[in-house]
Image 1: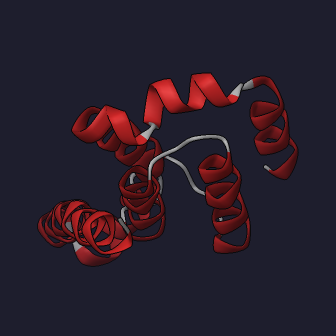
Image 2: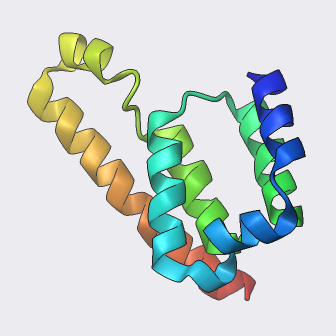
Length: 114
């Protein structure tokens, strides 16, 4: 996983990162990063350095906040296992609320850090 992240960051220029998930992309960039975060299974010790690298390459604060939040809280990849133990209703409710909460947190962080 570390190697893949390193390769991706090597090939993405700062202008590409800023164009896709920069502060100017606003809600569209947040949707992109939230979807990537929701379907990716990366441990925290990789996620936070990755977030720092993306910020240094031009990503927006709110976009990275929603990325890290969904990465840590929304479990698309682990949903089948979660459904087996907790049931479909609880899994969908937890993931849906976590996804929504990620946007709320990102908006708050975007306002406070500016």
